[in-house]
Length: 392
Ligand SMILES: Cc1cc2nc3c(=O)[nH]c(=O)nc-3n(C[C@H](O)[C@H](O)[C@H](O)COP(=O)(O)OP(=O)(O)OC[C@H]3O[C@@H](n4cnc5c(N)ncnc54)[C@H](O)[C@@H]3O)c2cc1C
Image (cartoon, rainbow, N blue to C red; front, side, top):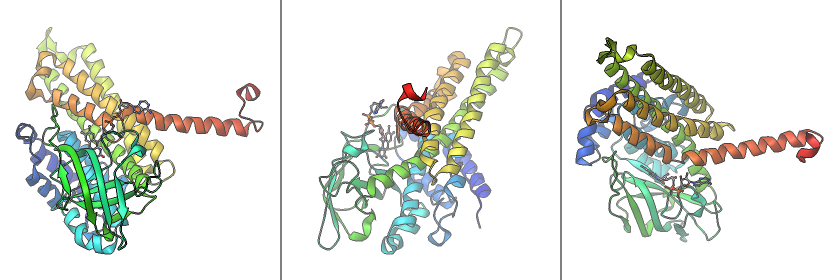
């Protein structure tokens, strides 16, 4: 029976042997490396949180999330895509009806089929409640869905998309459902691929849904649960991203250590200079903090404190990763600007990871909300009033 240590070893080997040596080539060809994700499936990395009876590894979410730190050492966009797939597989095993599970669960946990979430729309990113995609529920329970999704990762490559849709004109999350839409359903099409300066192997595009009808058993979360379920999934995604960012920081730091240790200057090496050591010491310090943050958050997912802990991790860690990549570039001098150092790629990945699955600013919104709640609780516990003049 696989355990978390053997899965971590498998992730480390996959990152070192399959991703790191090939990622530059993938970025040039701008194609999703399906052979690599097939190998990730063979290594047990595509069904982390699913029970073994469905071909998964049966890990708890907290135990599975460090996998992305290993994958993130090689590439954060690859780690991100696999993390989204794993969350969809988890939703399938945890929430789908048996007939859907029978059709899809083993295909997803084995990595033979890939999945992704489609929540964002052209007019609604951070303001996810403003989504416009709408489903009509037919008499036989099937759903007919129309709308446009934006920023769909693995666009054209995934075999099934977990789409969040309204089922009525009610605003916000009321009536929102999550529906699995196979890529080959009639009425599914994709817009032109987005041009990105890096992580080019990750296909991104709009997905257009024109009267796409799926059977009732493709409803993963019923009306009223779609957006809230997606936000719970996004909490897992936020911590997964923070985990991947720690891998990115470790790679940036190791690149800087290797270079400065071998770079002779002023009668010694660059690493003999206090100024360089202090810069890298700060990177190492923020990496330690980042690991503590994401591991704590991973352990709290699924509890009342999970969303806030995920926000703290997603706020701090991708930002720290961007600082790490930039500081390490600076430490290499001109060599840090050259493609073989890989540092420019890491900076661009960190910037992307600051945006996806809830921007840095949105994490401040989540944390700010919890502070207001605390302030109100403190005020009401003192003299039963919320008037700051009276409680002072
Ligand atoms: C590489 C990549 C892959 C992605 N993959 C997927 C995917 O597979 N599926 C999917 O559904 N989505 C995906 N996304 C979408 C992603 O989650 C959104 O880009 C993100 O939620 C931000 O939305 P937006 O880009 O529309 O920015 P906007 O929401 O328009 O935000 C613009 C700016 O305003 C700021 N802002 C927004 N609200 C506030 C506020 N209340 N207070 C202060 N500042 C605020 C933001 O932080 C940001 O700086 C992906 C994005 C990227 C970059």
